[in-house]
Length: 262
Image (cartoon, rainbow, N blue to C red):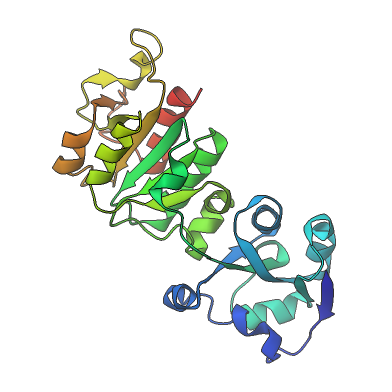
């Protein structure tokens, strides 16, 4: 690694770390921002994405030393300088710029046993939470239908605890024809819907868990489209004993993946 100390907020080497709230600029530049030591560690140590540089306080750089590789620019600066450069308080004193690279196609996910398929999930918090659950329960990938938020948006990466950097994902177009394609490759498409016919708890008890599953979830409120539901093999629900009518989509994904991924 090449550690370079910086103190000038106008240092041109820090250009990638300015205007971090401009997500459109990141997409145009083909980059993304990873925040916090744990997320940066996932980027550097277990991700398919390439890091362009790291900007960190002294303590954070020392903590990441084991995953900082030769040739990777590492800019070390006082905490106050970091905050002035990026314009807000940095979580755990560490940021990294990653390069998006070429997108995976759906073919890159077809060897998985369990896939999480999201339709019209436009909230980056929900995208991040769903990816965090996919990482925790061993899903082999996430399929994103049109209308989903960018999983490499800074907030989605942060909420996912780096899950969007380590769980492979692909965009599903055309839609919902991608579901037909998944079925053709041996996946059972299981739609999670409030009015699903069976309780998801019955899978693995009164009826077997399919050998390969594509778990399909829609956005809160509008739910799954009629076309997506029609392309599913079966619909299941998470039965609730309380007065609530539905769950946050990220919470629902965690419950369902726990049932299906084991």
